[in-house]
Image (cartoon, rainbow, N blue to C red; front, side):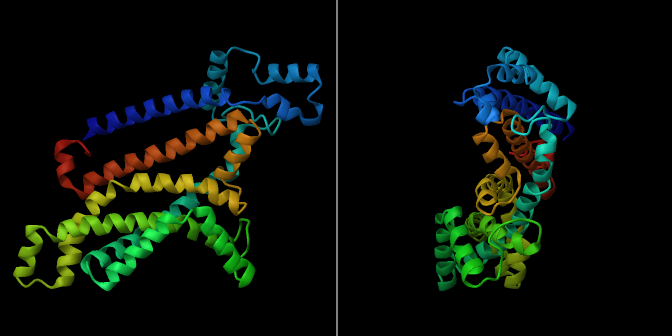
Length: 312
């Protein structure tokens, strides 16, 4: 198991290295000049533009710029922001670091139990009216774009009923609508997966044997079938959490939340390469670390993984 952990950690380092390199060169290929954007109405000042290029190292070859950025990562500052002159990247994104991961985690913790309960309920009553209602609701939830759902919720709860704030961040009321928008699609995905896995488990011989022995249906479902449903469902947790992080880009922009998603959108428009690259690296780190934790948890839930030393 130790060898497996070390191998996975090494693969994480490789993924992060590739992410940094690809993102760096991809950002340099984006049309536009960050110095021109930075100068704005003084863009015609050639001398000032040259001084700023030298200050930020943009007059050096790309390979040297990459090494400078790697040095910034090693120092923990991640370099200097182009958009906010004199501020390090970590200072620019510090506020977002306290918002986006928490927003995604809370949404996931809400979506997981609701999705499992809906999926198991639909599977237990497969073919019945409850299964049909849940299935239709799940398909509709997946089909609705998050920005459209956000607009509808704002119109109903903020404009018509005046129960919740339209946008902003800092109170529980301001977090309700963004969390609902983030929760809907992952809940539907988890429920559909839970229903599929539960139907497979309920058709297994050991479940039929338990029922034949007269074991109560509740024990058959929750003691025998549920555990083996959660094992394959666990493999999808990392992907679902990654989708939540990606959804933060839209939700934070729509609801004017100063998280990493909105900061990334603003940085892309402002050609703030260091901030954009750092946020991409952070999202990659969140995603890979969650999948790493899932692999380790998989070994706890399924003892066979510990015997083989592999999470596949």
